[in-house]
Image 1 (cartoon, rainbow, N blue to C red):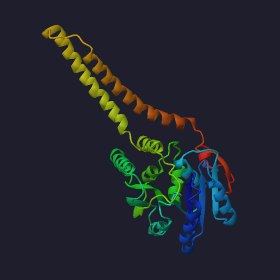
Image 2 (image 1 turned 90 degrees about the vertical axis):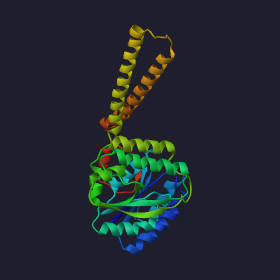
Image 3 (image 1 turned 60 degrees about the horizontal axis):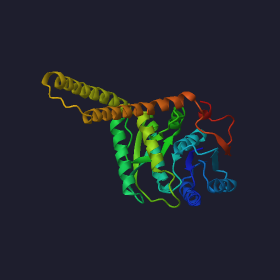
Image 4 (image 1 turned 180 degrees about the horizontal axis):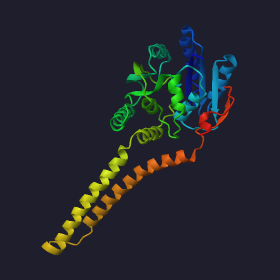
Amino acid sequence: MDLSVIIPIYNEESNIPALYDRLREVLDPMGLRYEFIFINDGSRDKSLQLVQTLALRDERVRYIDFSRNFGHQIAVTAGLDLSSGEAVVIIDADLQDPPELIVPLYQKLQEGYEVVYAKRRSRQGESAAKKTTAKLFYRILASITNISIPVDTGDFRIISRKVVDALKRMPEQNKFIRGQISWIGYRQTFVEYDRAERAGGETGYTYRKMIRLALDGITGFSDVPLKVATVSGFLVSGVAFVVMLYTLYARFVSGNYQPGWASLMVSILFLGGVQLIAIGIIGEYIARLSANVRQRPLYIISDTNIPTTSPPDSQLR
């Protein structure tokens, strides 16, 4: 197999037919042996039925049906686990990322690169708040991580089999795939494009899911928050010590002491707030350690038409 195209889907019935047609129009002239792997991540509409109908007509259409919704990054991971192409494209089903860009991505890969990601010049059809928060997140992440994660990029990219095999050996439960790919290294480059607005339906990426992905990215590739919590603890302790000395001086030396609750309450609330923030940051890291220690499977497959002789590696970890 020359190329595997991984397509996570969640309530995408309005986009699947158009996506399939556009992908075929792009890949057929390239003369490649290819497969489409649709991963149904707990859709509540007719997405799975549409994919199964396509699979009956086209043997190159493969599908993976999860037992429930496990999340976008886990869906991509399942596609990587069961893919067989020498190169793998990751693309969403909403048609915001143009399938036609696969051609220049593949051409760049043939030049000797192991990863070619799509970098957004502009983002149409998205609110100013989403654009601002996304831009802020990417730049904060780039500044606090110890690896170079490209800004203004998503998961739309092409990777070699070498990179896929490396990803399979990364067992963490809280996936942040674009960060993992950057961590792996190898020769990487990009192709710029203008991201279109969503073709149909509603996005499944709510602000809640975006925040969760951001936390996975930060806690998975940076220990700066822990260092901030530690430094804040020392600074607050220093301030508290100075306030304590001043209080003792005012009470026993200068005699300029007015009993009251205002300063006491301010100090307690300030110290308590800093402590809670530090505990919360530490808790995020501990929760991720706990998830990895439990070693539950990343996903459970309810049905698939991909022939396998044994369960995927990710379900054995």
